[in-house]
Image (tube, rainbow, N blue to C red; front, side, top):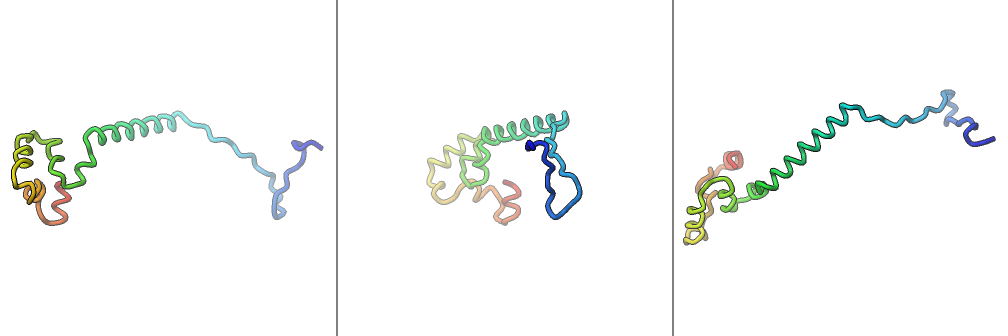
Length: 104
């Protein structure tokens, strides 16, 4: 008897016939959702990388110059003796834990 014609055995004496697994078909909604999600993640990742997003998680004073037009002030601070004592966030952000990280 060929393999296709053999009845399938179901474990534990179950009388139900064996079901064939159907391959899922992608609907138009699923494809549109995947494309939109891909665009959202791709544009978000590009924007975060382009804006040097990881620099805002630290206390580096150069990260302030990413958004603010303050290159003269940053150069003055970097050349002066004050940069060895304090950074921008030491004076220009609150010292409490929650307000400091809320304003970052």
